[in-house]
Length: 127
Image (spheres, rainbow, N blue to C red):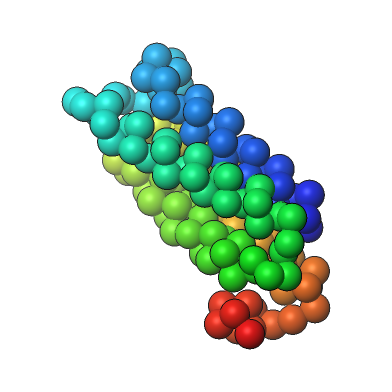
């Protein structure tokens, strides 16, 4: 689980760095916003989350709530990206990223309690 958390953090950093380049976003078939501010803002937040995951992977027991809540955030991200990808005209690339987030989120929510031999509620409440 430790390596999975580490590499998903690296994935976040690389993916966000890539989507912060407007020409890459356009190449993926995703319509660009009028202002790049929101693209860069979202990318900066995802880079931050990636760094947090990399750091959290070093001591998962102490930082388990951060990882677990990140799993919940990824499920919400899936709902948003799949919804906007399919129904909002953002295209299959956004939908695919949402599906990847869904898988990662499920692994966090199911695998972390097992790896730490505790319950999800204990992780959520930092017990």
